[in-house]
Image (cartoon, rainbow, N blue to C red):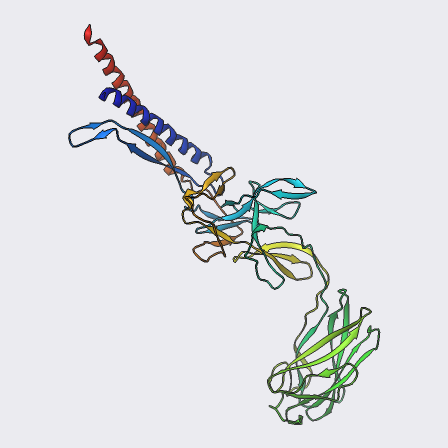
Length: 433
């Protein structure tokens, strides 16, 4: 029984070492495969009988020991849409299974991956080198992601619609020693169709600490002028305020009106213009009442502008796509605007080493792995995203060759046991001669 047991044990050893060699060969072959997780070997011993006075040969089995939770080296990439996860977690990805009416149809099952070599395909989807589509949260116009569901990320907003100017921000200083001639400035504004227009702002000194503002828009279809409004500074206001700061607006004409003089509140002048698409309301924000910001009146010989901006936007066309380290995917337009269209989350598991492996470095959830938790990057135990980078295989070639030598020697040693057991059995059978 012992000879037969030794023979069977040695054969199980050959089988186990063969499996170990298979794991090693798979690791070496995929040493340059991005996102690949090596497979180690765990040898398990099975006993036939073992007591204080008797031990009978058993057997050994080689089981795969997955390293899905062990990170590979993160290296930079020339691809701006490539990303790696530094730490725990996976990308949520979808697998296509055909098309219908020109649209991609996806498998209802959920897949996960660590390989982040994503690029835009012809339909605007982000697809990695293995053909899996990146999934994420849609982002609303307010910039908040919808965390209730995942969907394949698609860049389809190729045009940024024009935005009509609504607010003009002006920070400037009017000279405390009023000039004889009016001082003038210009501001560019956009209508609802994205067309550019010029508004002329003219400041005329009325008396100490009082100025009259007129706004002229040459291509206003209703009138070349929007009217006038008087601006009082410091002690010229009905209720005096700090010297050099706006105290009140008075004597508004035309479409112009000023906000009520309340200390600390915004000081704004509202007017309308019509560029053929109906009245467009605009607000000229001049700072705050009683505060030395925005429009001021201090010493100086000239009208000086510190800041002049407006919130209108012309028509924009798609320029590029960029990714931030919090997972926000943004579309950039040639009008200088940027729109966040999606956020890339990270999926974490309690035991990622128990995930089911699939082709193309993809994984599926199993009962042993635990539930998938979809969270923001760098939160709730999830790793952080590293844009413009790729995760390499976690295979160490030197370590694999060391294991290869040990497996080869162990396999050879088991063949010696088989040979010895065979010779001993032959001697036993020849005893009757």
